Image (cartoon, rainbow, N blue to C red; front, top):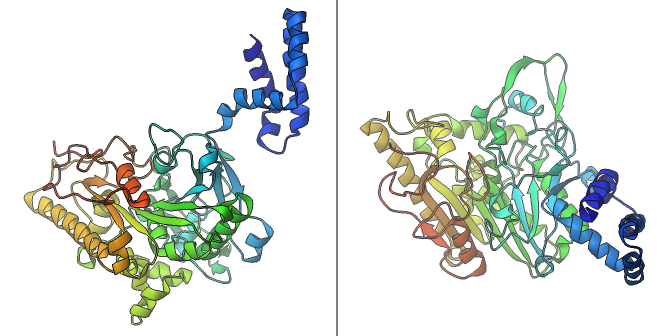
Length: 482
């Protein structure tokens, strides 16, 4: 009765204060008064004894012990609306402030270790496309929740059972609202004239959300009646993000940092790992970057849906900032540096590529595979279809294998996990599954295991599956050949 009453009372009366800028001294006094009052009512002698023993520190400890579990797993929102973010004009597509969610390390020994995860959600390729996107959570922060209470899973899961080696690190989850994989760099807003605009899941890769894919927003085509301003500020948003984490969450003292991202967020990491690392203050940081499901279009010959042209249009519309080393090597067509396979040889960061050989989003939106797209199996596929599927999978593995050997640096430091599954995103919950740990295996190792090897230098950090044709890995989650 004692504990139950206190928890109900304090949660209803002080929950808001405790989660923001409470007066801890006041709460301590009220907590101690309530506790002593109830105990005194039941046993005055026990109450006098407890009162003589308690001080502010012990009450704080009791308060923390009882209530910390309620809030420890939440990730709380932080908007990039500080003076510096405003000076560099950090904005979502619609002009609202970008944001990130933060959960503090639950272990003092890991207080200087950070995971920064970039949400996915495809791209908008034209101004009209981006106008429609700007009315969704993939282009505006207007509807962001104050907290994330359901775990995103994978590498940012606070559960030891599901994320053994990274569950107590500081976790940062970064919503995606610029539409260009954090690449857009238009100095001035772009005026979009009235006209028809549409944004649907077909132009969006799966993001890594807690309830399947938050990139499944569908915006019914509308006709705008007034000129609207679009803000292509992804590049500035990344600068603002790193500055805020270093200023407000002690990341300036980090000794270990992994950035990760899924889908369009995976491409973000593969394109901008070097830039992100260049913004870090800590001089001796062990930095690693994981591009999950970001290895789009392994070969242009298998692009049957004009994806390459769409990405080229996006680069031009947003004035995308791309890797300078890649641009120097492709002066005739620098826009090819929007693809990870072209950028990877020039990266100097410690990199990890996490992919499905038969990437489910790519099968539908790049290859245009006719018989095994979302929510379908291979039951209706012809022999020719199956041959095309295998060709795509082989092209994916060949492209990533070449990248691992593309520079002496990558030969020494790069890692990879490529499963022969029809899957999209393997480091957080996505498409109704979380295969990060104890779900998907290559030679007995999970993505978590191989990433651990790669980052901590405890093994090869390489798992490129070559078990035969699709269906050879019995642990594949979403699709079957039956």
